[in-house]
Image (cartoon, rainbow, N blue to C red; front, side):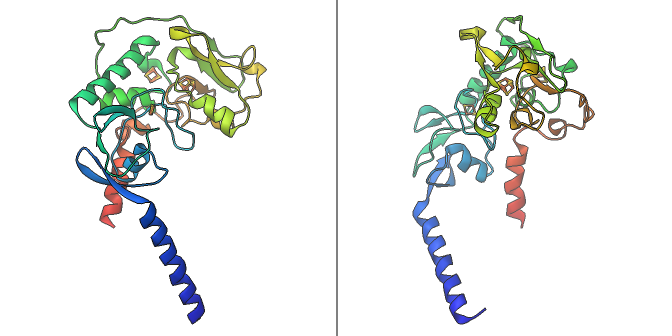
Length: 262
Ligand code: SF4
Ligand code: SF4
Ligand code: FES
């Protein structure tokens, strides 16, 4: 490397460090100092710091929508969705308090009672984020709410894909993926209030231009067993699936432990 190249590299590095310093700040999550940057949400900064904030409607690669409220934290004493609330200098965030833990448990419980969830016969068992969240939050038995047992459609018209809306939690991930990434608008909501559910842009799935390669159909998009890829049933045996091996959120928590060991 010539002297000029070395100087240019040092100058560029100094500029980058300056940029980082200008845009960086510190705030607290449960009393622990966490670094944030302009443009980050509380959840982004928490993820980077290895602090897991539970979530269902948010997933990497899609714009956050802030609808499930499972990520609710308190910011300076007021409830806010961590997936949409910007991180900011000096804010005090509460994440793991008993009050917030109970809110999250109630939200998860209501999702079980509002739909039809029979985990032992569900293909998503073991890789389902709703089921894994219930385990993480210590929900092992029915709660105080009645089971609504709605009658919802199952669409098996497509040769490769099935839609079982009994398990839909209305996270909107398939809708955003189909619109923003696939550019297709295959999925959308139909119905209102408690009858609102995911539907397709056509008489049934077979009448749409949905394809197995769509991001909307990717395994990580639907957090539950609502969008099913036919022919792949139980392709990973029960007991060896993602959340059979480690609790939901542990990849975020472990990533920082690993970085710390280097
Ligand atoms: S979608 Fe998840 S919570 Fe619902 S039945 Fe399947 S495994 Fe259980
Ligand atoms: S089908 Fe799956 S991804 Fe789409 S809204 Fe329902 S739960 Fe979410
Ligand atoms: S993950 Fe934030 S509202 Fe759903």
